Amino acid sequence: RKEVEQDPGPFNVPEGATVAFNCTYSNSASQSFFWYRQDCRKEPKLLMSVYSSGNEDGRFTAQLNRASQYISLLIRDSKLSDSATYLCVVNPPGSARQLTFGSGTQLTVLP
Amino acid sequence: NAGVTQTPKFRILKIGQSMTLQCTQDMNHNYMYWYRQDPGMGLKLIYYSVGAGITDKGEVPNGYNVSRSTTEDFPLRLELAAPSQTSVYFCASTQEETQYFGPGTRLLVL
Image 1 (cartoon, helix red, strand yellow):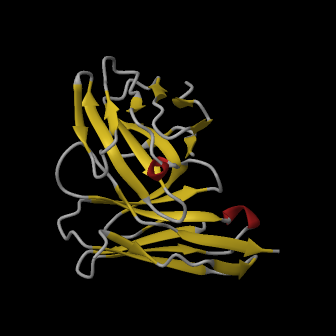
Image 2 (cartoon, helix red, strand yellow; image 1 turned 90 degrees about the horizontal axis):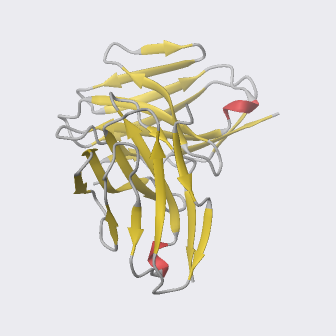
């Protein structure tokens, strides 16, 4: 079983749509959770951290379910500029602040 | 601050050649990492460092070496390039939780 699993997509949605991405992780002792965004042929950048109580940043809402080892990202009112690959990222227990990356979910927002 | 910089941006190597991928950060971060990303795949950790003089293997270290003589620099060395090392290589650094990535080096081994 992969440590972090995501639906690879692609998700093609019209502008203004709401889209949700899901992710599961295998290590129940994982400490921290993130969503990173990666534009085509660019480096990953932090989109948002994911907290146990759920958190929102503008049009983006992240949720964590520790019991199910499940993370989600909801994007409301999609913009063309949201087109990217979204990486689910987990900080497993242990050392060196290492991160484990999912393979990513590709989103294309269509005009 | 330039953040994390990597050179070169792109390189073509012949099988058996060697090269060094350079990575520098100006944020005074102790933790630095090298990843490779193959098409459609997630990032795989090659090597990491928790401070100057300290390095350790990640998930896929075979065929690579690193050194960390200063806080700023974390070069990645390929000794005998193989086609399986064709990939995009990202360097990253962190002090807390957020990892900051360089723009990447695209390597093609023919």
